[in-house]
Picture 1: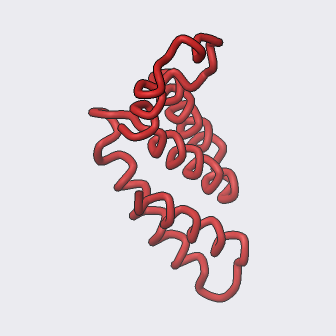
Picture 2: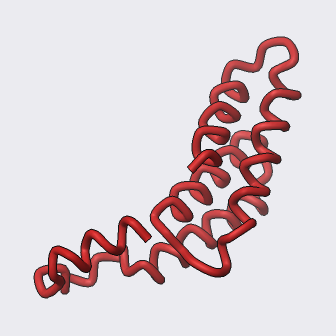
Picture 3: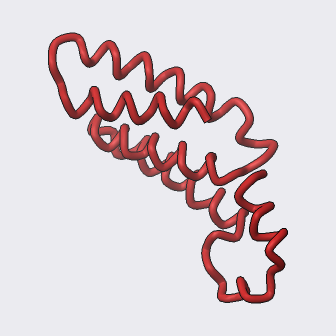
Length: 104
């Protein structure tokens, strides 16, 4: 997912903090956030969890705790929907079901 790369670049530029990096981070972040919300309600995937976790890290770096907690909450809920919380029933799942969860 392109949003993941955008967020990685945004976080990297945010950490570097040289010159016009704030403009770069903002543009990457806004593009990634728009992509993340575009299809998130219809289907959750492992990429949904990754993107919203990265959004939370970016907003923590920007000292925006409220937004970070919202993004982290969305990531956690998507992980629960995908049953990534490790209930211990993984031994009963077929290999096809395990692969399907990570490729949806």
